[in-house]
Length: 129
Image (cartoon, rainbow, N blue to C red; front, side, top):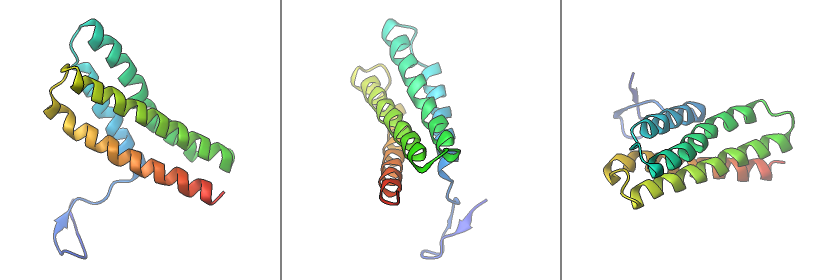
C-alpha cells in the first residue's frame, strides 16, 4: 500500500521500521549465502557472512528488551559491530570476484544505510544516558 509524500504529493512506499529492515537484511544475507559457490572460499566467507549478517537483527531485538540503559547501548553497539563485519564480507565477495558486483549493489547499499542509522542510534543513546 502506497502513501502520499506530503512534500512531493507523490505516492511512495511507507517507511519501514528499523526492526523490519534488519529482518529483511538478514533474509537477503541468507539468500545470498545460499547462492555462493561450493568452494573453500565460498563456504568460509559464506559462513562468516551468514553469522554476522543474521546476528545484526537479533542483537537489535535484544536491545529492545535491554535490562538497563547501559545494556541497551551495549546491544546496539553489538548490532553495529556485526553490521560492520557483514559489510566487510560483502565487499570481500565482490573484490574476490566470487559474486558479481551487480548482485551486491543493493545489499551493500542497505548495509551502508543501516550502519548510518545504527551509528546515529548509538550516539543518541550515549548522549541521552
